[in-house]
Amino acid sequence: MLLGTQRIDENGHLEVGGCDTVALAKEFGTPLYVIDEAEIRKTIRAYRAAFDEVYPNHKIYYASKAFLTLAMARLVAQEGLCMDVASLGELYVALQAGFPPEKLALHGNNKSLEELAYAVDSGVGHIVLDNFYEIENLSRLARSKDKTVDVLVRAAPGVDPHTHRRIRTGQADTKFGFNIIDGSALEAVKMVLKSGNLTFRGIHCHVGSQLLDAETHKDATEIMVGLMADIVRETGVAVEVLNIGGGLGVRYKSDQIPPSYRELALKVTTALKEAISAAGLPYPQLQQEPGRSLVGEAGVTLYTVGAIKTVPIKEDPGTRTYVTIDGGMSDNPRPQLYDAVYECLLANKADETLEKIVTIAGKHCETDILIWNTLIASPAPGDLLAVQTTGAYNFVMASNYNRFLRPAVVFVNEGQADLVVKRDTLEQMIVNECIPERLR
Ligand code: LLP
Image 1: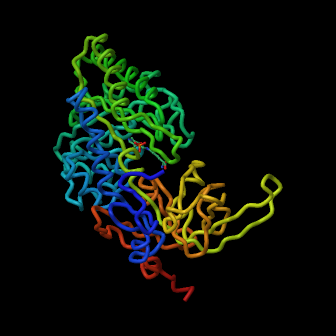
Image 2 (image 1 turned 180 degrees about the vertical axis):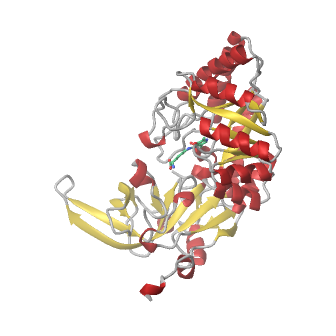
């Protein structure tokens, strides 16, 4: 599976964004996150165009939790999208990149007073409220600053998406948002309306992530329109915005086929239009927060192959070959956390016959398997392994486990490679550490 601008060059090397991955590994070292800039731009434009066509009154907030660096925030700003941030850190990076604050939305299920104050002071466009405690806190804070803050109320639509249990968010039994069924969501809206310094703009939901069909989005949309109708009936206040979150999946393996953007757009907006006219409501602005689907397939991680070991096993075919790489769960924890699957290829032998079934093992001090039983060209120490679809939730979830240095990130575009995040250094690793006097 070749993704985005990837191709195999005349030397049999994998090329991304017009750059030879073997040359990238030489210049920047491995492990290395390589981001295909043109692919991100293309994806953003295709996503937007699909919704422009069927529902022009819409806005896309890129969910920065999927992948955020200063350069990425610039790219998102250049493409004219809005952006969702879900922590002090994400907000800080966005603002440091010069992202227009009014195009930011702040999320979080336990926002601190510091986060709320930072968001209000920097003038973020709106805050998505998650719980009653937060409504009180934000309202008090806004009053003390003599400001008015636009808010959305996050609701849990009670739908059950078909995705890994750890990345479901919109079911009824969830820590996120206000329950619709027990009346909490409506109660929250009433509380906002009474609060004075908060301006109610609309409602929000996010049903889950890596969804490979649009059914859950459709179901959630219908339920949310039901909530809109309840709000209008009970309060007489219009719901200007309906945000249905993100969640569209990507191809980690070639047999995982997410719906096209057009298919998603059609399904969601048809359901929306039908439900809105049945309820006799004015059309809301449709907002979305895709993260993974805008960046996932644009990332590839390069590793250097080290030790290769074949061990006897009971099952067929009687042996397993472990191909060890110079990274693992510290740069991609997703296989360990979510049983995530990936495809890979030998980037320096991209034109060679696939002939060996191997297991790609990380170098951390535990099982740390990145990919079980995958077919690649005949591997040797020193080869370059490229793991596909690592643009989302890899760099941002990287850790220093085993005191590894987090990899660098490069953006590639039309033959040019630019470092956007330097590799961690050993010096940097201990910069925040102190030795108490008694241990000296
Ligand atoms: N909006 C909200 C409120 C969210 O919670 C999320 C993701 C998104 C938008 C973006 O969803 P996306 O389009 O990326 O599916 N670390 C996990 C994914 C957790 C996603 C959590 N929320 C993983 O690696 O699969």
